[in-house]
Length: 141
Image 1 (cartoon, helix red, strand yellow):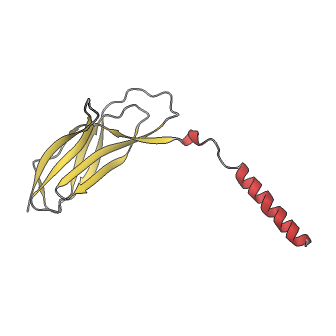
Image 2: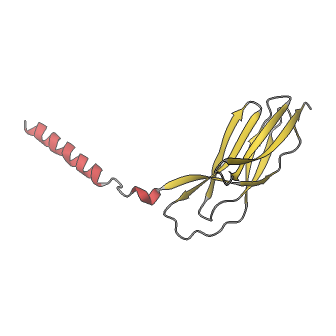
Image 3: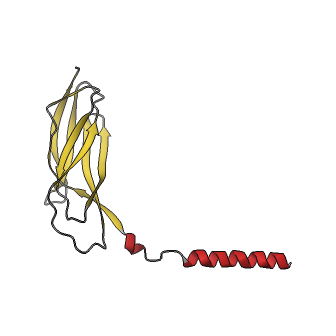
């Protein structure tokens, strides 16, 4: 009986220690993501089937606190949608206006006809997504 009581006391103490160490202030690491509008891209008129191409997207981060976090990519067969994702902490306070940045997305054509690229470039006054659009043909080498 004494051993079971000691074991139960140890479990209770361990649970108290673990819960005391939890970080209740989750706002310290409150990271958010946001789409950054593309300004321009280096998409060519033609790509070569099976050959990778680095698509450079010049984009405008909202502030110096917004860091590149990757791309949101949708492969809809011929329709290709691409958007730059930035992350930031809502606790950052010394954020300044940021210069344009360039992010690179590697794309390999898997079709032999064409792709319709749509790269997110912001929102219209009505709040609808606006895209840089370009039809890119694919040739066999």
